[in-house]
Image 1 (tube, rainbow, N blue to C red):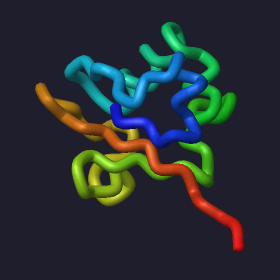
Image 2: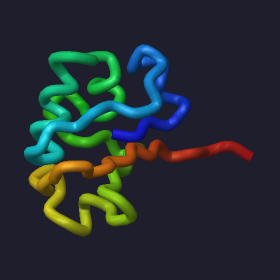
Image 3: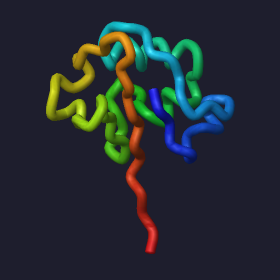
Image 4: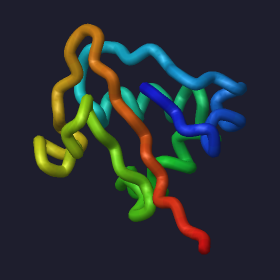
Length: 87
């Protein structure tokens, strides 16, 4: 999982986290037990990805694939992209 600068503090400063094979949902569930602060910045209390967060598997938005049920294979790179605002 590749993290933007804005979320790295919640991951102990890490820019990338290893992903186990499974689904995006299972990766986020594991994240909830290991880095709950980071997981809460990505998902809401019902386990839905927050509206201002987009998740990409490689260059594909997971919403264009199978959403949280998108399979992660060995070496998958899941990018966490928060909305950017400002002027």
